[in-house]
Length: 225
Image (tube, rainbow, N blue to C red; front, side, top):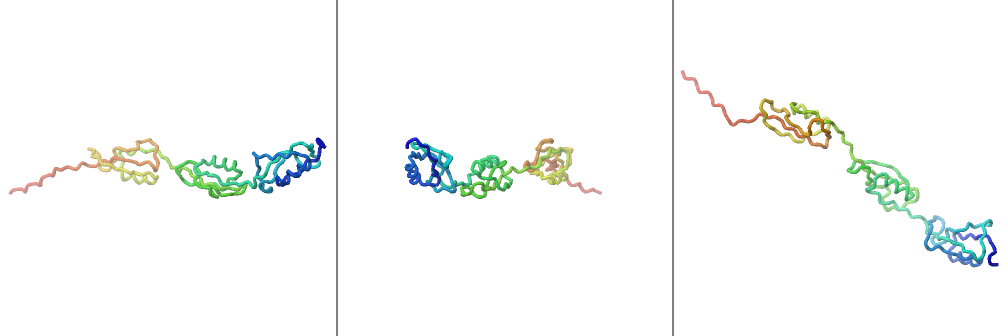
């Protein structure tokens, strides 16, 4: 009877013991692949989940041939990966590789540009395939940038409100005597005219102030008759 073709048996779902018994009765050698396992939501762990020949009346195998099978590893266990610190693009790619989907994308201001700071569900959570995972992404805050105006020869008390109205801050005011210039006039500035400036940049000005003298004019002597 060796070499005679018979219909390929269906071993899917069978335990290894039952599969070996069926193969032995049919004169087939059963080879269990110990290096590979396949996830399955239907086949119990350790049972046959795959065979290298399709079963059925139209599929034949010769007696004495080898039928190779792989066993079930049970349902695929998916866990939300550690994504904190990854860029948004990397996080999306990794979720796809884990058979997960991107859920809601939310953004907050932060020091990093497009870096993930939190996920929902949290990392390590066991989830089903195709589960949406929401990402909270830090985006570097956008600061309005202006061209630094020329403040020289202008009054500080008139300039300061205009700068502050645009979110610019005159953080340091120094005073210096300057002959021939009225008090309160800006004589130097930093940043210089034309430089880019934002609310993060401190503005320093040097303002004119009359020099105080220690000399006191003597009182007039009374007129003698």
